[in-house]
Image (cartoon, rainbow, N blue to C red; front, side, top):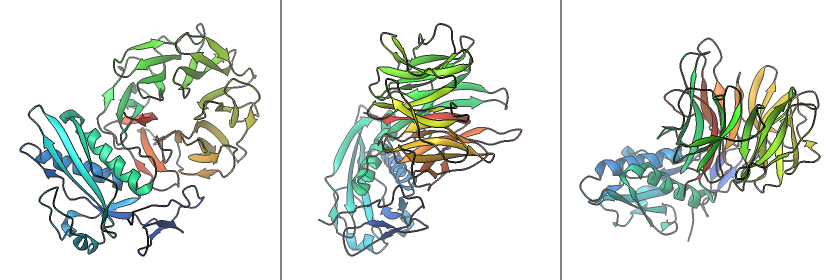
Length: 441
């Protein structure tokens, strides 16, 4: 069977690439230069299988299309170009009609709602040029309230089957929601779908909150709060919204927490005598271990996916730079050597890259480098870009971009690791400090 296949041959290349699709063999995207030509897909509106499911069928189809188009790797063919009209989910696909409009892939589906309000979504994915189905059709069951998640799950299946990569659409992001004028903004922790939908607030605006970080399982959040009068690390349960302060340092300022991959320990910064060091804490017993003891500022720690190493920023060399050390402490090695200052390093879930913020010549940028510091590439640049966070599959990075000036406000942006597809996450108010969680179960 001839399968749609995207071979990301230069996914980590220094120069953004062009994708050209060969029509005489398995469909492949060959990266050459300059501009990306997305893979074209058609998604006829999903069939409504009973009364009351028309609107859901339309909305689910639109979210799937938005997910795929939003990657920059796919381009939807508008319905006005369709030659064939589908009337039932079971009817055979007339492949020549779809080849005629240059569709390379097609997603068909149907939506039904039972008397208890439960939703059934059926879907199939086709390689139009080979005239074959990609894998087997699937059926999802859920509730009306969870229809967007079902749409994301369908899009995840399409993305994974065509690209061969792990998906990321059915995931959530925790962030700081901000409202009010600059200099007097109120802050609340909030959680959203990866695309900015379904915002829920986790805290009120009674105190300053900073740097929320998702647990590996997405059920808890570590963050820094000023509710006790000074920075202190808190642990919050997402489902119950219950929270507790961690015993991180006997009245000293603690900040920049992050979970270990096992979810049972965390690493954070603790201010001591004018500088800060890194500590590790057992989230169950409260037992602490000091990891650094340098007369400098060590902060923004992040574990490697296997939990064996920690990347962090330090000014021990005179300016902010990135270092890597064993997870239990020990000798650290510097990995950043380019011009300017480096901060907020975060290890990719794939384990092959470290994202960071770079400041040079009065501008900020989000970049990535290999774990040994080689092959540094900048993905964005503005007066103030900072705080990267990785998608669950390590393909996309979110970060904060702040507009300068009297009424400037922060927003959340995303960019592909090739440096392509930079875009703003549309939210109703200012937002900062995103932390991307795992795929939902």
